[in-house]
Amino acid sequence: MFRLAHFSDPHLHFDAPPPTLAERFSKRSLSRLSWARGRRELQRPELLAAAVADVRAHAPDHWLISGDITNFSLPGEFVAAAAWLATLGDADDVSVVPGNHDALVPLPPAQGWVHWRPWMHGDDGVAAFPFLRQRGELALIGLSTAVPTAPGMASGRLGRAQLDALAALLADLGARGLARVVALHHPPADGVVKRRKALEDRAALCAVVAAHGAELLLHGHSRDARFDPVPGPDGLVPVLGVPSISAIPNPKDEGARWNLLGFERIDGRWTIEVTARRWNPAAQAFVAAGGYRLR
Image 1: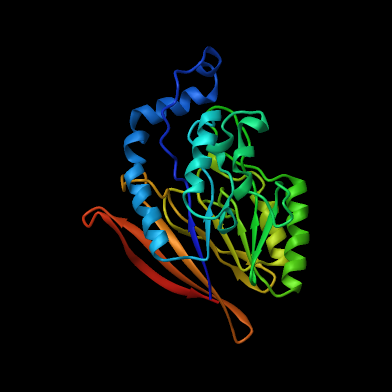
Image 2: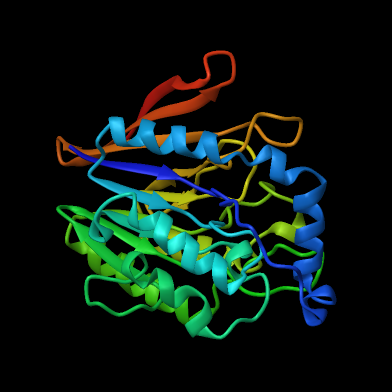
């Protein structure tokens, strides 16, 4: 059994320098305001540290982080995030896709995602989306839905080039019998988040999955745990989402949770064992939140 740990939206704490004049009139100013007015107290670094320890204790074969590692898309944040990612283990065992907070404003590549290249490239060494990382019989496909948007918006977009490349990958990997896991930040299904936070071309993504299939889609961005399957060529394709891994339970957030996913071929079919782990404030620890099997 290949075991994949999935969590999302760590929103790393970062001591941001005072905003420049230009930043005062950019989308970053709204994120700074939201952070100062409460999000800073809800996204706790000690909770994230406990989550990382809990994941490590379960010894997964691979880690997947589905975006929103930063808060303001400041150049220093990407450097600090890279240092944090390096503490999780070998870069070949950790994969990252970006979220909307990782593309809050337009940024020169050298100041942004280039620092995450060790965790965000395919087996061919190319840092482009979609990327493909094959680990045994598991094929992890990373997509980017992260694009700068107008103030007040947190939507995402894939674009035609990514969708066409994804279709080709799903067809090829499916013909080879691999377990195809598609990772992205924004939810693919309708109605999961408000329109201003949604994936703009989710219908086109779902059309690709309906035509070529996949074994599992994973996302973050939602503030609660999600199970929203979408149609595939031979039935429903499961879609799992997790809330922020560093969020204290509160009226807007279900609270920190991560999934351990075990992939095994049984009787010629892929089976996925899902074990959910959630933060329990009373115990001050991550505890089992149930489990189930997907076939």
